Image (cartoon, rainbow, N blue to C red; front, top):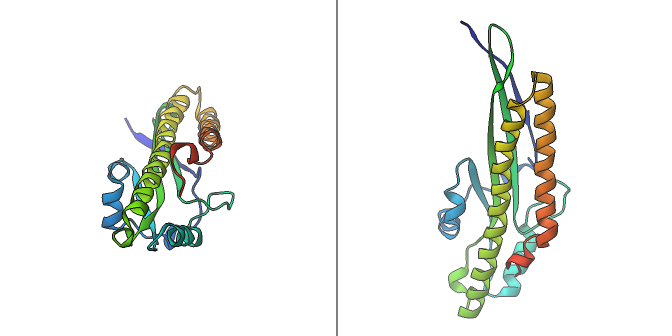
Length: 195
């Protein structure tokens, strides 16, 4: 029996700008956001932020923060990319054997001068950063659940054309769920991501 891989389709949902401006996370950022760094399929990137007080740090964030797909700039962003592959036997595509993989890229501010801030400002940063990480972690969870939903929908399709359509429809739902989450939380402000 011949196993044939028929198609590898990369559906880029929330893959965004060129992330080369945002290096992979420094050890300092990984230590500050260990829960994010431990997720499977997630790459953490950072942009360096500096300042000795809240005002200076806020200015540094505003200067360096990344843009989302619409071009709006936020303190942190999460992008994901789904790929699916159909396999089959004897040259026939079998949607029931669809495999969905994904990658997630998260960009967070990386405060290089935390130890130079006074205690009150450090506490304000830590509260903000915890809220920001919580918010972006929930975007990661939306993307992960989306991968499972895409695979389930595609595997239930009657043929590979319908499976591709189902995958595209489900990935659109993931984007809509993420946008709705941002709307409900005011991009994390209701979760403490205010600095």
